[in-house]
Amino acid sequence: MVTTTTALESELLEIAGSVPDPELPVLTLQELGVLRAVHVRGADSVEVELTPTYTGCPAIEAMSLDIERVLHAHGMRDVTVRTVLRPAWSTDDITAEGRRKLREFGIAPPRVQEASGPVSVSLGPTRTLEPLHCPHCGSTDTELLSRFSSASCKALRRCLSCREPFDHFKEL
Amino acid sequence: MTAPETAAVATTAALALGDDALVLSHRLGEWAGHAPVLEEEVALANIALDLLGQARVLLSTVGDEDELAYLREERAFRNLQLVEQPNGDFAHTIARQLYFSTYQHLLYAELAAADGPFAGLAAKAVKEVAYHRDHAEQWTLRLGDGTETGHERMQRACTALWRFTGEMFQRVDGLDVDPAGMETAWLESVRAVLHRATLTVPEGPRTGAWTAGAGRQGVHTESFGRMLAEMQHLHRSHPGASW
Image (tube, rainbow over all chains, first blue to last red):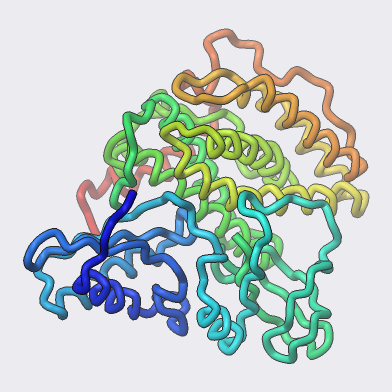
């Protein structure tokens, strides 16, 4: 499908994309990669396509409200935020700048996945073989404490060099 | 929640999968405040949240998600009897997770590969469920191949829930999957995990003796009514209330 994006749509996409993520406010929605498109439907009417990170992520409702708010402030009277599931969001959709900010914030960013599709289920040891760096000291000597941390998208790990626990934005 | 773009979704299938996710989500939520360690408290709640998200998408394709969750009677639910089984001890919950998440992972992988009405959700959910499956497998190994008590409890749980595992491979209208192929893959995977965990693969029948069907036909086990009463009572006591 070929669609052309107007200058206004690009501008509105940028404004909506500048909204901070409600749970990880260091990231914008653009950096998180959840904003799919903005379609202008009339003089002051706009439709925004947003995709959830996890299907059950409760942040999506706050994101929708925040997008509505900034676009209303920008003169759009009628703002519709539509949830789209396809194509499925992946942690590969997080921008390079987003990854850098996560690391700076103390969260190990997700590693780029080589193949798409489900994360392989392995019965391996809890010490990962792929290098994952501690966001505090940079060491690759880390261990998994729990596959699920403060949110579905994060796992809890511990650095064996500096001994600090840290969150890892796990690959999806 | 805005319903995602869906063609004419087969209602029977959406209810079956949506009810599985909703009911298991509620069961896992019952662990809040009771899990053996804080990490598991958080893990089980996160898994419950993933399932609740899947349930909301699926039930919204059928009708109003709140009405479906809170105002249906027991016989109108189409979930597997496996997911409504009480939590029991932690090993019991892990055995239920192992059996169900292995099934759900295989199912969503098939649905994601086909281009049917569930492909969009399945492509997302299969990645989430991969973590649920991994979580269940790791715990099965740890409990089974751990202390004597852990081994004993894990064995008891795997055996007790075995009779609810046959139902997962009944054909469901509107689901374009190969139940026999899925069952073979499921048995292979579960057997391998149980072997590695030094557990014995249960030998008993994998379905109940009654002929009226099971959860997919709206026939549920005794504890399900009590679970629903707890899940629905607030909504029914205060219809239309909001925060």
